[in-house]
Length: 281
Ligand code: PT1
Image 1 (cartoon, helix red, strand yellow):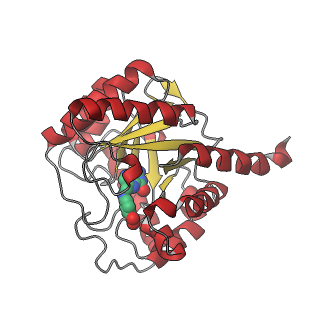
Image 2: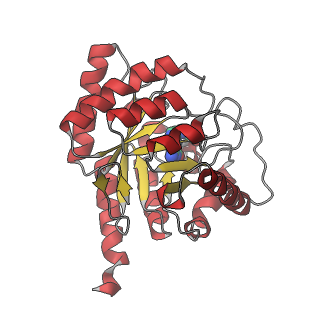
Image 3: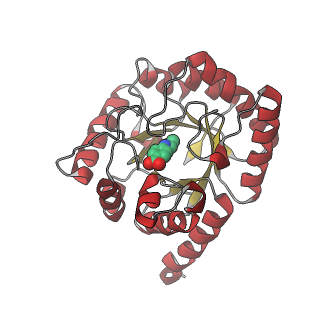
């Protein structure tokens, strides 16, 4: 699949490293906000480290979307993400993904050289479908029930996997209508976005049903509360749980795994991949 000017072979697993440039990021490991200068320096240090550890993508986000997070202005987001995108683009060989729902940010990030638009609101904001179509970049459509502020109070589904599968059928059709062909669409079930623990576990177990649509699947479970709740571990002790679910997602057909701990995840998926292709040698 072509991400801007970089091509990735999605028959192998890929790791997307999280680079948050928000003051209120949910995971301390990714939060880099202090002041403009320290922020850019620290962000670049993290970016270099994640590329050295084998990340194929770096996902740059200027709006926290963890449960309970507040909204930010478009200008705030632009000020946070564009300098980081430009600096990475100038010095690192990696596909840059912009984690945004804001049309102006999509357009500016595309000009600055990103290869993927990652939108947790699946291009649902006014003007987002058109902005994303205009960039001609691939887009990752993530499923979310509700909005970040309130999504975790009592999420309900008839059947979580069927509901999300139907949601993507409809959303992909709307994207195609707006000028985004299916060849440029990735999907993500949105672990932790308006889902109970049981919803998240069922989604992972039955992830193959989403993979079956034929679109590349991206997942993000790194350090999330679904791991914390099962293991009764705080944020900084969820690595082994995260590696377990990363491998399970890959085995079920997910091609891209969004994580904070790039090096360990690259090793885990590399090992899993060797097993998965062993009968094709
Ligand atoms: C994700 C994702 C994302 N997650 C994509 N983008 C976040 N494509 C940000 C918790 O339950 O999964 N896919 N961008 C981070 N959001 C959350 C959600 C963080 C839930 C934590 C939780 O702890």
